[in-house]
Length: 596
Ligand code: ATP
Ligand code: MG
Image: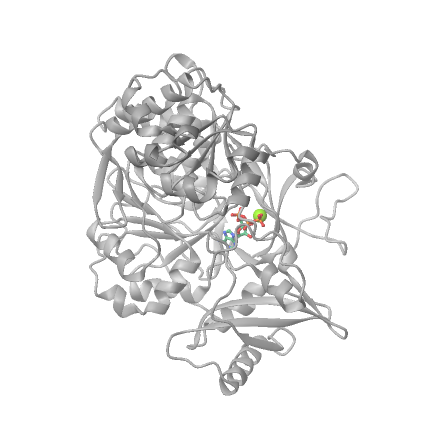
């Protein structure tokens, strides 16, 4: 189906977008200017993420502005101002000093989305130790593996998470010197009390004054584990200079303005929830919503309405679930304050972009990046027309290319050492010219793998895309998800998006199934919307529907119904697990597989 371009400006463009014209900004943009937009530590002592995110606001006119608006599971609201956040994160940094933790050591955080998590995260960055956020739904073994790989010396957690997940592995972690448990009296009531420290008591006793030490922009700040969609998660190393990207992308790609109420729905256990759930909004001095609850359509719309969210950053799976709940649920809420909606993490089907207009009165702006890139790289912008199904154009300051891969899947390099670029409209590997501030500096403990990410002067993303004549990028599939059938290269995303256009379909995962004749055939696993029954008639209808739109060579040969597609905890469809199940093989590392 040919989706119509969504033209800008649209009526919600008030205030006017930070970036008025994409091409003009691209021509004028330099990372040096972006750096100058930040303060730096007083006295020229370097650049520290937490200073930019908290202290500079606490020392200025935004001192009493609400930094975090925390909503707990029971509907209680708790506002934390920039001044309060500065003081409590100072206390946390002092605790680390008292415990003898030194700059560069790793502090892991395993917590629900409460204010304590943000205090610990920012205090750690002030202290110049390395922040490693973990997702609270991880089981004990994934937690242990990551702590071991990152040689964590401090773990901050809650009483419940401690009892359920940490107590049993603590003895097997020789590098782990301290476990800090937030939650006051509850912590000391645990039988393991002696093996943990009471964070609330420590915070109460610590000084609220702290001077951030000299911070080299190249000092390691964050260790992020990838989502594990394609295999064992990797630990990506990021430095304090990343804050320059977080600020620039917040301005350009999320269009943050000083009076915005911003909601990033990702958990800080994933890079999106840190780069855009902690750093970017705070660096911009806006109010950020911290919601402890899990996804629920009705509640999410209530948060958008009641808290007057103006900029919303979420993910395709959540949007597809909202779509499933129906536009009526959305229309029962006053979402008139909402100005800009963006999505990341997975390909965003054009159907969903357009649904946004119908249900929210706003299109969804897809953008693309990875744990490794640390920040948004390709995006749809407030000022730029949207081509539904496209991830947009490269961020100003980012040079992106589509590189040809040879028959072995390697990037083709010509005689002079430069990589060969694909022609317009041709598929190839999305590559980025290294040098932006939030670029990862390595995979912890795996130099070889890090080096294999570069060729011919480019960073290779591992994703396949094509670029149209106007420089919009279109996602085809992850390098290892692309299906080779009878000499055709088939991107799962195209097949999935086509099936999504059928009224019965809520979500789809597509894989290549080995076939003696064709190499691989396309198989689709379909989740149905409420009210539809999985039966043979519907299966034939879906087969015919996709064949008519995609042609016999690309359309799925097989369709199976599956109401519980395997997802990562961060909400991505795990096609490798679908494939392993189909072939009766081991599912590999499933530490990030969500319970269904
Ligand atoms: P792993 O590397 O462990 O397999 P992962 O790649 O899913 O996991 P992340 O770094 O969280 O870990 O995800 C980045 C990947 O998510 C991208 O490389 C891309 O495949 C996919 N992705 C992110 N945003 C988009 C988007 N807008 N459109 C299509 N794909 C996207
Ligand atoms: Mg990846």
